[in-house]
Amino acid sequence: MKKYLFLIISLFFAAINFNLFLKVHNLVTGGTQGLAIVIKHLIDIKPSIIILIINVISLIISFIFLKKETTTSAILSTFIYPLFVRITSLIPEISFIKKHTLISSILAGIICGTTGGTIYKMNFSSGGITVINLILSKYFNIKVSISNFIINSLIIIVGTFFFGITKMLYSIIVISISSMIIHVIMKNKLTENKT
Image (tube, rainbow, N blue to C red; front, side, top):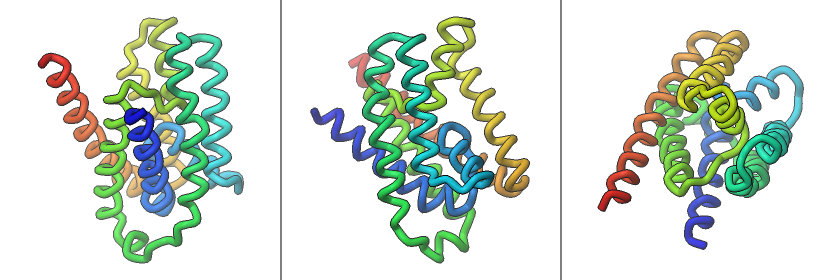
């Protein structure tokens, strides 16, 4: 039960991160969130709806092509995260955050890394684009890390096309900080498992 509570808390803070930092600055960092920012720019649909649609499609694909455990672990994230994105979208924009993209990028990276690392540490799946990585790994023997890098890079390139190189550089800051924090959290998990 404690594990699920941590998942829900992590998803809530990930949603705050999306609305307060990533969406405000159009920072496309890959994944479902990045796609939501790009699609929102193209057609005026609430990001929470876009994320829900992508997650549900991914969940169905996961059910067809992946293990039952993988699909089960993504069910909670599939529906709770878009709900939290919708709820936290009601938080008014903070002018300090809107004026300071670099500080926002650093904070977004810290929150993204902490929430993502916590979710991975508990062996949960966040669903969404992750499912494609797992399918490529299972059926085409492509490492998850490589497919993750390629797919997220493509999403970032699309974001760069719409929002410019400067936004891409800020997105890279978010990804770099996030990756370092996830690495530390997962390294600590491995250490805990050995003892």
